[in-house]
Amino acid sequence: MKKYLSCPSILISIVYLLLALLHFSPIAITYKLVFPLAFLTLCALRYSSWPMILAMGFSALGDYMGVCHNFWGQMGAFALAHAAYILFFCRTTSADRTSDGMKWKSGIVVLYGMVIGMFILPHVHGFLQAGVSVYILLILSMCILAWRQKNPYYALGAWLFVLSDTVLAWNKFVSHIEGASYLIMIPYYLGQWMLFILSAVERQVVGWISAGNNRCRVSSISTQKTHAIYCPYSRMMLMTGKLTRNYPNVSIVIYGWLEKWLSCRYP
Image (cartoon, rainbow, N blue to C red):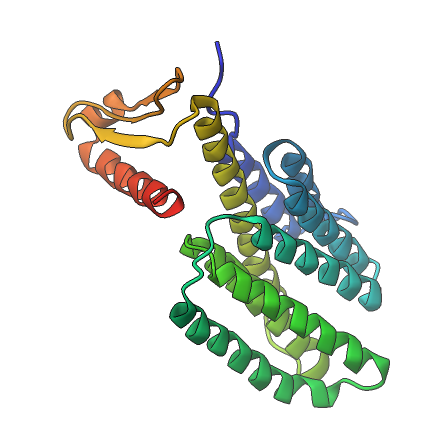
């Protein structure tokens, strides 16, 4: 029997969370910082597209360079990761190309980059200043393209990444920040997880639609009986009747999210 739920996002999230918590634990493992993104890279090989595989892989390489205290290597690897994210967002078909919306979104990102650059770049000297400037341009471009997507959680994941790098740069070049490790790694891990999970789920939905050779339509049979996603010309049917009967409020919320997701992704 064909398994339509081919992406075990819940299991992946649990393992990823445990690996992320390992980083903050007192257990002495040399490369434990690399484990979460290395794990997502392996998962991306099965559940996501090749630009996302590159983004996860270069991010894991950047974490490795950070453990080795190679800042140039770390910055270069993450710059390549952002380039891969840019490629990923350029290849997606769910972008919001309305000019008015993109103008103010891009303006906010550019303004944020200018303000941060004014405070950070004067403390960076030599060739490193040019490298940091290029890196800022790449991460801001990634953030703009992420915000262009109809799914707002892409933008949230990108902004978490930007926040993490902002704290890292400020702590390294401007002044020491108390608890910087938590302020850097928590947004970083959350942002990477969000970007990967969204890409994996979207790819799965596209696979469902391709298998059915038609667009998915959400049918609400009854708020007290069964909610289902049904793709014509395929055998894919997700039944959540038991959940609805036992926890009607929870199922209605989940169904609402799913309906909103599909209506935004496939208007």
